Length: 290
Figure 1 (cartoon, rainbow, N blue to C red):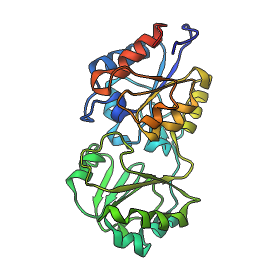
Figure 2 (figure 1 turned 90 degrees about the vertical axis):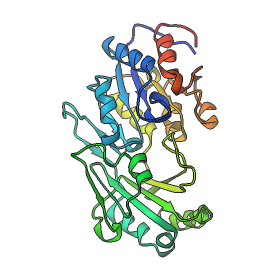
Figure 3 (figure 1 turned 180 degrees about the horizontal axis):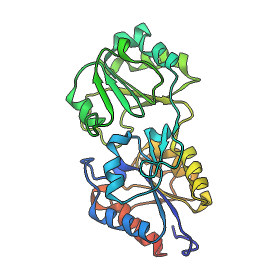
Figure 4 (figure 1 turned 90 degrees about the horizontal axis):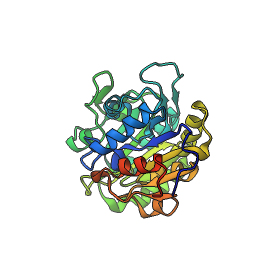
């Protein structure tokens, strides 16, 4: 893959886990950081599009010195965390649907724990260190996080519902029950965020049906007056699929999903731990064949 028209200022979309971040989920590879900062300083727009909530992405946004829009929950929350000149877009699951799902007797019986989030609050039924770490529930003080009975405590719509199952064998039956809500929700199972450090945890993540990174790519391209064919995007997992397909230069990480690689225009030569995004983007912006 080779970039055309090197004089154009690009919109560069980056996923976090498994892409810009190293496998520990806690740091950006130094090369990736340097190249993204240089791209920003050269006049390109760099935007984070992540499945993470605001609280778990804002420190990387600040570390890169970004002033652009930030997208969380794979597109369910689009906002301007710095200047606040963009009216926040939140695309949730309605309260009626949330209540219908968690009170479904089969789903209720199959779950050992439930996490429900909106863009600035989270409630989990039972304290669990893995859930707190994986979903970064304690990362930002101005987000509300409660441990409480979700059947009684949750009110309002939700950008994210996560069902933690007692037994992986129950998953098929849960999918059958969730079919009743198919017009409202999108179902993602397994490692949607790129780093699953505890494989024994069986979880199902639910978001608004229309939410995906592909339509966010269109919104951001419009906002920054960029032809979608000139947009560069990096991702590693299937929640990046629509974004990688939609943009002109969709790049899959070397450590990423084979299904994602099959639709990508390019694949990094190095993994996220090796600064694959940084080295690839640097060569691309220099007009080299990669």
